[in-house]
Image (cartoon, rainbow over all chains, first blue to last red; front, side):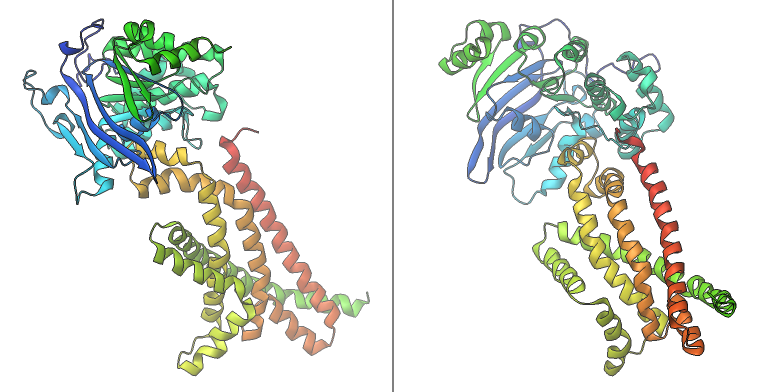
Length: 293
Length: 222
């Protein structure tokens, strides 16, 4: 990273504003035939997904539909039963011409492959992606700054001074400059979730994952967090967001996927899917969500 | 109390305190430290996904908790020699007390580890930690806070239980009191004096427990 870069610059080239042409950007994330069962319950039937570099995919659907499981598989928190997840960073793109090394190379995790140790393939996914949890899951015994440094310094072994400077810039940017030495319990839900986002960004992931990031927040605190995620989208971070905030999905997502019964029922442009869904199940779901009474 | 009783109590205080300093306190500290290491090992074995490892720990804990400490002590000191294994009083006592603490504290530590929400493991994995790193940096520090009160109980019980070592000839607080009592025939006086010294030691420990809890509670909402 050169000194002129701001810490929030995403690792891939930003392509803001290009919301309507999915084919225009090369795929960063490719999921093929992802399957997952819990005991005898099939949670994911066969999921195919593609997310272009710098684009935002919103996953919507009823609870229990499998959308959170998709996200957890992407972060290696669940071990899928079959299928592949491929992550192609910009450096590994022949078009970019940059040298590929380490996490700069293309990586494919094949869950159906025999012999591969589950822990190593799950760890490989975690090297590439970072998750923002519904319940924040900050480390309560560590201060805000320590929460952010834990991954980059302790796990990635990057120089502490460099990471600290970067973390402080990120915290300042999300309005938490005066909270760096506070413990999580001293923060509001909205502040905790912003720390959760900074903790994810500090890992320099190629893919950002959000699991219902505002579902645990008081209504008046939701706006701050959604605004921050929108800024990240405009800056060109590649993201997958599980959300119930349809307005937000319409405005921020480049594409939307409606998940039900462990399948992707409908996938397309957010405005089209939300205004005029092709599938009856999508229509029913949106109708219930928009007319709760 | 008569003057001679006072004099006897005072003159006995020296040997009793020596017994505490040379016997009771180091015996309790060493046994507790070793016992905690054993307990952590047993707790992690119990939590292991390997069934046989978990089963070994479960059986061990069951035996330790299901048999009297005095019997364990006698088996080691008086029983093992018949198998050709002769162990001195002090190490015998340390072994028995460590095993006993290990069995009891293992369940405390296991429960404390389980009390840390699953989301903490996931957040640790998310930032890239291995299981071992997640355990040492994220889970155990939080489990430690929860386990201070019950482990303090275990330690305070242990301090008093070390009096059993007097039965295998370890020079400790109670044995010193017994010696003076046998010599002077003032049983009531000397045993009450021993009880008082135990109580004072435990009062100090309770204070330390309070300080420790306060320190570990600094990141929790009140």
